Image (cartoon, rainbow, N blue to C red; front, side, top):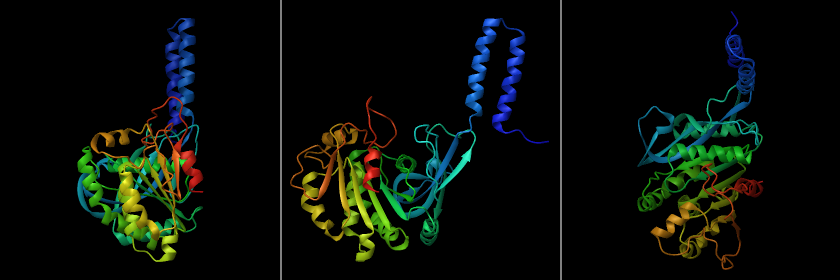
Length: 344
């Protein structure tokens, strides 16, 4: 016997319920129920496409041993490991489909999730990571790679979701990658972990630049993750051709001491021609916490930056810079719109 699809089955069930209830109801209650039934039937049978996106990752978190994808890695420091993971993207009627690439999969029917969800995590040996990434990039609509480094108090699963959300919002068709360091909920401990992660992040960037076929590489850091990303870019040893493929360094509400960046980090970035964009904010939650824990102006603060020529500073105070998908302002434009223009 032919199996009914979920949407057709839902229609049949609702129709039967309607017939049964109509027989014993008054006309007014029948009309109310019919309207409710029609609305629910339409909602259940609308075949919105939902999509899953394939991400590649590097992490120096210790594996947890859990079989649950969302809990694959702990918040403890470990050795550098590599892999791929899948994130389900809930349908957004304003954005609709994620543009197709060799990193996306489309299904039709009811979305399995109302929010971003990590559905699979696949650890890979480094060699397999390199060959798989290159194969996916071959014949891809866009031969580029986006590398995201998260900030303070972000789990591995949340880092994957933020990377997937960024790809979806940007309608990005290149290879989406992220590096997840063992961020916890303790600010001072996270500072130490971010510092310890630099050598592993250097190795990750080196592999992406040397072993992938990406012609353009975009680096995006958020909050406390901006400092290890800048340090890694300053320390990575690549030949001039490989270094030139790193086109953009985007720092979102960077939690870096501004004097340290100006005096000790920026002069060491002479090895790259990457264009640098810094999104500043006077309303970022993580920067507000940083001011309670540390003295001094942060690079992400809204100040006069005339003494740092060659860097594009964008005041994003009216935009949610957390990247966690939870809108904080009633009137809000998307930071992704501006980032999309930067990486074009």
